Length: 168
Image (cartoon, rainbow, N blue to C red; front, top):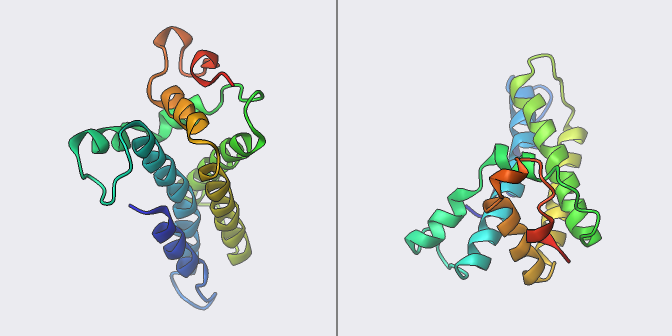
């Protein structure tokens, strides 16, 4: 799944008219899709860096295995580690990912949440910028980040710093 397609779909949903009886549902889905765009961009980056770039997803069983190894909840937990020694673009990606995860939960699970189109568009914009910046980080740093997310040491616990895997 290409993150750009998910962003495009999110933008279409965020463009809903307030008179549309599905207005809130579409805005909620747009916010959720901003998070999913980040998730899928990260999963593709991991697979491309650890196995090799793939023109088509699922080209090899190994590529698919790495792509699907990233779990949303475990990625969320592991991203709460200390990344202060990482490049600013990496820290921004982590911050936006964590915020998008939280916003997705509110949008998808909290029935009292009401969104505006501006809020949905802002969430999408921040995700798109964070993804673009993340993908511009040197492959070696993104590979180390992938290893941190996919191969954490159980002795560290889910919120361990992972400094051995992500050391600059």
